[in-house]
Image (cartoon, rainbow, N blue to C red; front, side, top):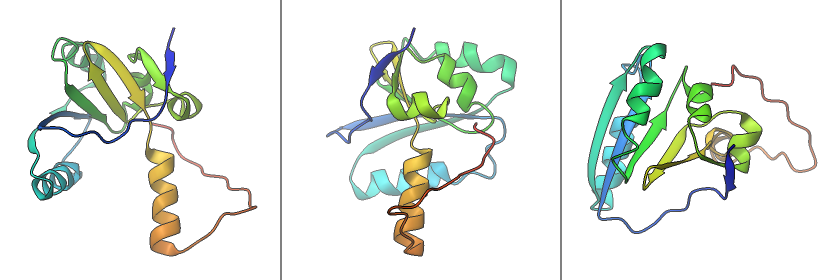
Length: 143
């Protein structure tokens, strides 16, 4: 059974180890974004991408449990499958039924989903739209 936790918070870090899992990653600019952000903050980044088949994901991810401090980013189509591998979940991950961020703390996977928050920040900040006192329906494949 999954435990519940609050969303991840930025912490002071000396180095950052990230593993990025997806089926096809050639379209993704996530590595460039992380490298740029970490460089600007003088954070040493070890970023590794893993294009895996569905049958390989569980084995590859669980292999990282012994590497405490290696965090995981998840993209399509594995967000739901990764959710099932988490030991602890945030409320928003629970509500979404999927994860895109996993913190590995001493072999315990803490899953979170920042997709909704990222979407809302983009719409509010870049498009200057307000949803105050409005209902919003967002459709998607869920992972």
